[in-house]
Length: 205
Image (tube, rainbow, N blue to C red; front, side, top):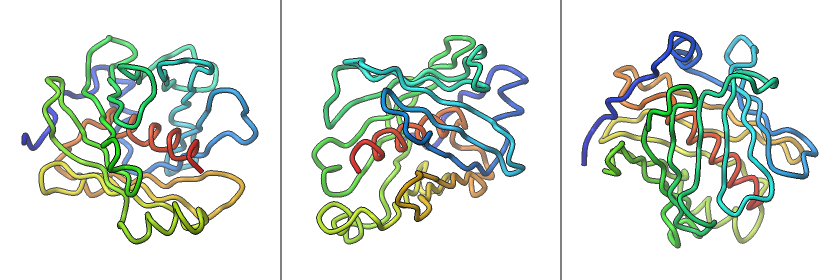
């Protein structure tokens, strides 16, 4: 397995936005069709706005610079019709450059969510996993009020933490890249992974 993704953000704007290490993601309340997420930086400024197109057989999510949606930064598209083992291609919304892909570990994710991080050649370079099998089973079979936590790694190095805050009404998630001091994970792929986790986990609850 490779140990790093070599692609990097291609514009100065992207470098500025993606240079942040901590974010807070908030799912838009009472949005019935599709899905929308606000992603704020540590200072509380809107860094990204993500929207999923409704009524699509193939899931299609976009990440924009703001709510006006004039500047598209990331495109996340499913390769096929929704299933448990879907692969999602991630591309740069400005250049069309393929950044990598994220693949859900099918039936295994029914008990404990696991995602593979793939490079531009579909080679596995990392994983994103739910915190523990025990807590995952409690969430699925007893109560979904226990906040979820995911850890992402490239090789043996931890690169991200995704932690849901306890709030039964509004989905809020803390996203932390600060442990990735060597920049092993392309931040565009990390943001895409967080948006996917919000969208798919939110739909399951």
